[in-house]
Length: 290
Image (cartoon, rainbow, N blue to C red):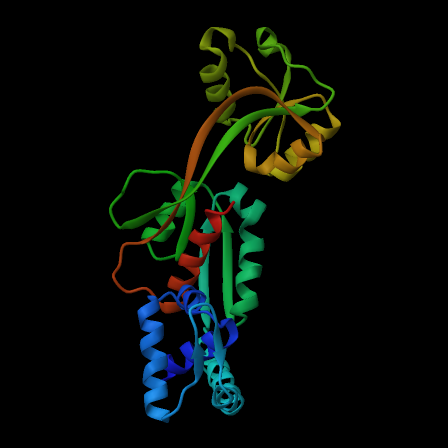
């Protein structure tokens, strides 16, 4: 007798079908017959009465079920508890992120992670990609979220998230690409090159002359708030404005878009502390769901 044979017995007892038992256990039907035959051989009596159409447990099978089922259930539960036992990790994880992912979803992902690993501490810094790359290479940050980049020396790069920049504005606005220079714009920086780059790529360089920047503020949350109150235009990540677009607080003024990608970076080293490795893998998994 072994656990596998007992598992086959319990399943056949419940289904009274060799075919269904084989399907449920993921084994071939002859293997089911072999397990039952071995149990009956060891016990010295029949467990099931078989005909061409039916399978019926004997009285001995009922007694075997009553005696062993509680023991097997308890053993399975104990095994499950051991498998699911959480190891308590401790330590600090230093993360650098460009502003949008940091504001939009990084905090929520960390909060979810801390429910499983409450003893891990986090340090979050919102910076430009170039500074994050430098800090990770110099050991000042453990993990970075940056715009997609080539493979510089000293870093490991993991694809993390794909998104698109789109043209959005007040829901009362209409957009005419022949009047590009007549609108007022909101940007992340006063000298933000993304606005001109987007407009030139989407509508052509000849159309783009003097863009009137009404406001610059380094927070996408505040940009969205401003757009809902004023007739201005901004270039924002589609993932950042999906709720506002769904609720029609903002509208997408053009179907033009620029795709971009985010990467997760770490230092290029063989050894990584276990709690940092677990969080890195968790973050990559969750970002791909967004």
